[in-house]
Image 1: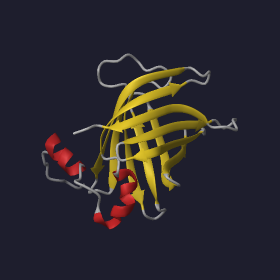
Image 2: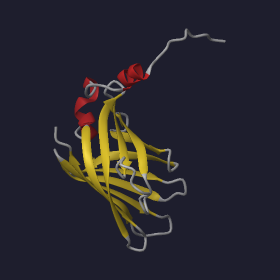
Image 3: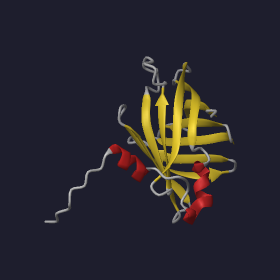
Length: 183
């Protein structure tokens, strides 16, 4: 049996150990694919039902460097933390994505966790033209595609799409327009 000395780690230490000041120099250029989003964002989210209904709500997104600057982590909060009612179709989000660059495949391994809705996704993300496209599958085998498009220093457009196994076309489920917070 191994015995380790007990060390007290308070949340201040935990945050310091998790967060990084910037990208790790080893893959700094590749890490900027998602690193350009580091900061705080306000968002307008549109959820789309299969029947064409739309619901819009404000949200917030926060990106930061973590794990010695080898990964980018974000938190998506929809709707804002103002006690808003449940967001129809997409549900309320309070989840985090861990985006880790994997040089062995020249791509990013993406893990999304939203414990409140019990939604967990694995994807692989790559640059496709000017866009960033992440692809994966749901537990039931449906294909997922999450894309960052219209990327600028102060804005981006994010699309969440699904393609059920029996379908021939992608269906847009969530559409996010984000603007970087000033200051």
